[in-house]
Amino acid sequence: MKILKGKNKIFVLLLLGLPLWYFLYSNLGVLTDYLIDNVLALEKGAHFTESLRFFIFELPKVLLLLVLIIFFVGIIRTFFTPEKTRKALGGKKTILGNILASFLGIFTPFCSCSAIPLFLGFVEAGVPLGVTFSFLIAAPMINEVAVILLYGMFGWQVALIYVGTGLFIAIAAGWVIGVLKLEKWVEKWVYEVKVGQGTEEEKLHFRDRIKSGYTAVKDILYKIWLYVALGIAVGAGAHGYVPEEFMASLMGGNVWYSVPLSILIGIPLYSNAAGIVPIVSVLMEKGASLGTALAFMMSVIALSLPEMVILRKVLKLPLIISFIAIVAGGILMVGYLFNMIF
Image (cartoon, rainbow, N blue to C red; front, side, top):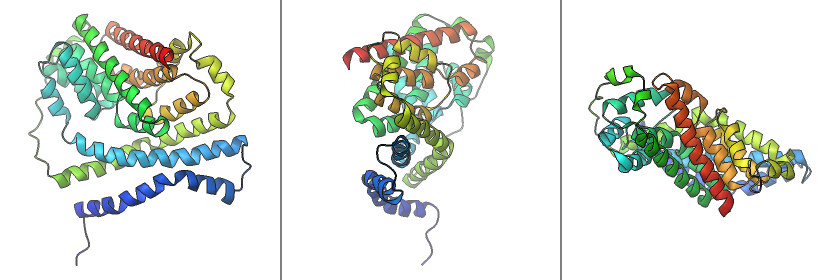
């Protein structure tokens, strides 16, 4: 009998890997406590012990969640290529276009480096500027990494709140940009560029889609595992050593300036969801309110400094400033709203 190769190997790994994944994920707490308390025999309650316990528990938990969800999202994304997205949004106007663009942004592969090609492709396809911005806001902010990490650290309620508020900001900000008619602040050369219609897409079989999920896991984990580890390491240090009173006084719900301060701190920072969510988790544990923590996270991801620098090649400065102000205003409103509710 021949040894299984290629795509068949992926099916075998999937069948064997799912039970192993479930066992590890279900017993992480027990395994972590056994390692810390019995094998290493560290002093319970000590700052270093609790920091190390946090790191050893959270890192594999997050990585396991990422492996599982990225695999299935990788399969889903084979149905939502950038070319299909561009065609779907072509000619769409007003609020319906903003809603569609925001939802498509969740499933379409996106990073800061692809901002300009996507922007040019959307303009050529006749996608209105406001609709384009709804996509550019939703795609990096509401991605599977952010949702997985939020679910793993806070539960499905907070993950759902984040997705809902992120969609609201993407839709509302794109709609406002469209209403203000800011096309005059797009560089003139943008409307003269022809990026082409793309190649005819091959019809994928189910095995090819499974392989795409496997490839997505390898590619994405390779790019973000270090951010995950560093973020959790920072979170572990704060978990063990930062006093709760300090964070509560700076980012607590009763402090009126906590939301704008968190946005001002977040805008110039650069991190992806993998690096920022573990830090946000500890901020909340130490007394930061939900609205303030979400505002900080959204400002870091949605208003990433490198993306603004890249977009400067196609947008004039007044449009970039307007974009930042509109999105920051939406984040500010969300932050205050959730600080009032929770």
